[in-house]
Image (cartoon, rainbow, N blue to C red; front, side):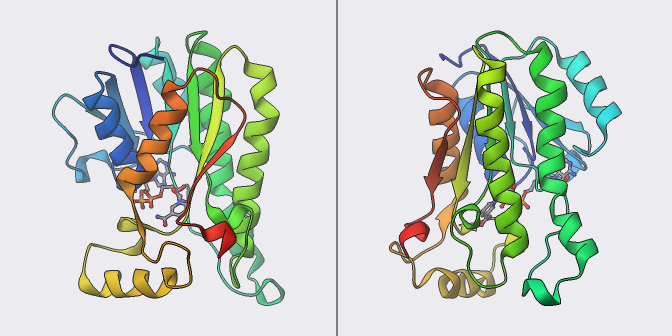
Length: 233
Ligand SMILES: NC(=O)c1ccc[n+]([C@@H]2O[C@H](COP(=O)([O-])OP(=O)(O)OC[C@H]3O[C@@H](n4cnc5c(N)ncnc54)[C@H](OP(=O)(O)O)[C@@H]3O)[C@@H](O)[C@H]2O)c1
C-alpha cells in the first residue's frame, strides 16, 4: 500500500509505540487521527488530529468509525487497562481478568472498524514477546498476548482482501515504564541484560515493523517480532 493520502486511525496513538506509528504514517503522507482516552495530554505532530475514545466503549467506537469513514489503515497499540503480574497460583483473579482488557479493546476496534474500511484496508495490532515466551510473573500478559495473536490469525481469512497482522515487541522504552529518566534507563537495562541484544528497543523500531505490515500487500495473518532476540534469550 502506498500510504500517501490514505486515512489512518491509530488507537493508543498519543504515546509510546502508537505515537511513533502516528509520526511515521504522517511522514509517509497519510492523514492520521490519533485516538486515546486523553489525547490532549499529548504533543501530536503537526497536521495530526487527536480524538478522545476509550477502546472499551463500544458505542463510542462505533460513533468514531462512522465519523471517520472512509479510512484505510487501523493501528491499535492501546494498552486497554492494567496488567496483573506475579505467580499464577497467587494471582488476584480480578486482576488477571482485567489484563484481558487489552484483548477486548483490540477486538472492539477490529469488530467495529473493519466493516467500513476500504477493501484494500489493513489492520495492525500490537501483542508482546511474552505471548510466545513467558518469563516468571508474566502469565497474564503472556496469555493476553497469545490471545491477540490467535485472534489475528483467526480473523485474517474472514476479512480478506483486507489484511490484518500483529507486531510483537520485546522490552521497549516508552512511558509504559514511566517518564524518561535515569532510573527508567537503569531498570530497562536490568530487564534486557540477558537478551541477545542487550538494550531496550525504541518505539520507532517497533513502528518500523508496523509500517512494514501496513505497506507490504503480501503480508497477512502473521506476527512480526521486534524483541531484541527475547524469544531466543
Ligand atoms: N513498552 C513495552 O515494552 C511493550 C512490550 C510489549 C508489548 N507492548 C504493548 O505495546 C502497546 C503499546 O505500549 P506502549 O509501551 O506504547 O504504551 P504507552 O506508552 O503507555 O501508550 C499506551 C497508549 O494507549 C492509550 N490507551 C490506554 N488505554 C486505552 C483505552 N482503554 N482506550 C484508548 N486508548 C488507551 C494511552 O493513552 P490514554 O492514557 O490517553 O488513553 C496511550 O496512548 C501495548 O499494547 C503494550 O502492551 C509494549
